[in-house]
Image (cartoon, rainbow, N blue to C red; front, side, top):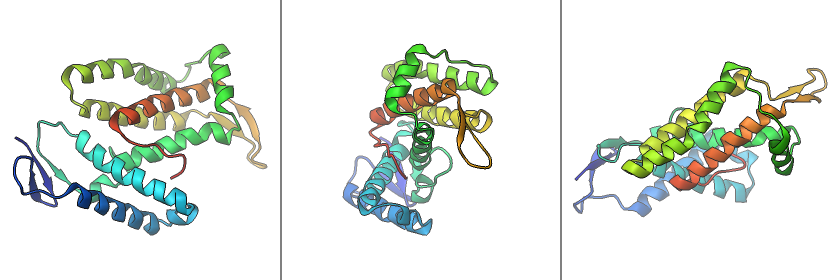
Length: 219
């Protein structure tokens, strides 16, 4: 038997002293909408996009808050911590994923162009941050095998967070697109680094699918 503590109240898995799932999900939707309005992000979204973001973030955060903890241990459930867009939360991961996906679009490079480039472009790993990201990507099969062996999904969540933060470090240090400082026109596209971005995005997409989290194009 284990306990999830919600709002400092024990959520017992084998008794009737529980919070209904519908109430939990509805509360998540309300809080996500409030956070979007607080940051004025709701003004940048169409009504349809707003509903999509609300459901994806709310449901994803609730799932991730549960799955990112070792299922054999108790933990305190906090909406404020769950919806934080910093740290190991679904909100942060969803936002980071939309940013990764936008890189190729900002360079006007299509998915088809990336697929063609993957067949002919040699990925150069000259910078330490490139090496670090590439090695993190290659650990994905190893992590999946471990999860299949012990059925502890928090290991996958830890890997996903590590991959995302490793990518952020890479992106901060390695330019994928160079633009003219005066005109903003694209001067150079580093296809090797764009392919690292795409590989990262594909691994994140696979991980989201396993965890039941719906990615977003805009957030």
